[in-house]
Image (cartoon, rainbow, N blue to C red):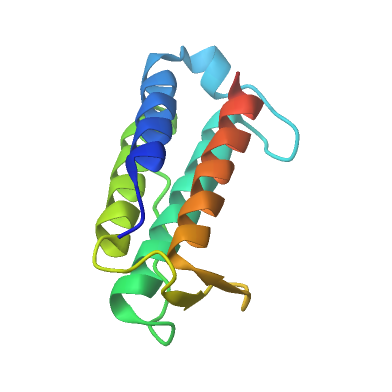
Length: 126
């Protein structure tokens, strides 16, 4: 199993930051997104999609994380990040995977990509 502690730590910290942001900051635009909340929701959707692909296979129709409002994004991030950790748990580090965009990676590689994506959104939302 890939060491998921880094993802859990990063996603929990980011989720807590989103939960603490005032509405004005949540709704403020950041590069590439109309708001910080939209950036967080896009990340939650990405993490959830990867977890779904691992659990159900690539042929399952992807579900979208619903926009439940800016104040829900922190919780949505936490759930999606933890779901991805659970989906990765039974896999060995070098277990081969195909990502949503068709790229080849490993379970450890997917985990590293998820940590990097969380870090990128954290920087945007600083």
